[in-house]
Length: 322
Image (tube, one colour):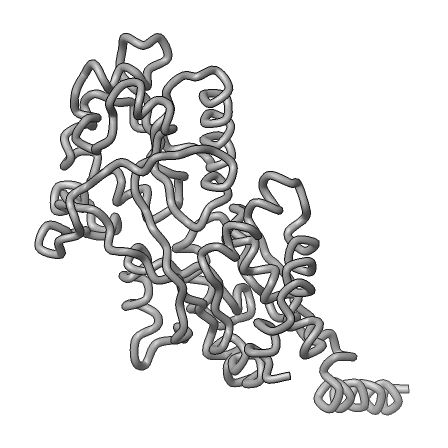
């Protein structure tokens, strides 16, 4: 009996080596951070790899960018692909994990993104609020308060976003932090507040980025800022206990470049996947439309991705070579 068991175990191990799919080979994992723009790109890649290469791909929920990068870094299959690498926001993580000799590969192609502060055009025109420096006027800041008299409320981003830490510095250095309650809530909460403000004709102001579905949904104005100046942009990672004191930012963002990153383990085990990831690139307009389909029209990310892929065969052919 023992010899039979040993034979069966040996046969099972051999089959697992020769036919890993039958041995429960792990799927390729792609990060889903829960916000519509990143979901749009993630699920396009997911569906693309499934339909074009026959891969088993799983979207995994991950709400914190540093956690996503650490999962990529471990090269253990927790996260194999991350489609929303904003530079310069995530530059420190790219430097840590994706430089020469690192554990993660940053795909060469990128598409542009923008960041800043937005309010509705109606409020901007009504109260003459067109510059970030207008927010340091107590009377104008009060436009964004609950009662129109006290401190305003400004959304800096969600907890776990690297940009939220940057916005905390910028609020201080632009001089309006003392006149506002600095809010860090989930993006869904901020969008609900914006929607309520638009319907009520009241004030809302906060961090905004494009591509984003809100630019298709609302008439927004991006507040003017001084042009990006690297000499006025010093950001220290929060791992330093004195990061806020050491950081100094009094200028606009440099226009972002949005890349895909993938683990080196994936590149070695599935080079055909890495080859496609190196060719995938989006446009700002395409991602905004994907996000609109997900966040506004209520389509699932997978359904939105399948529709987009079906409507863009030439783009897909350019990525896959088919």
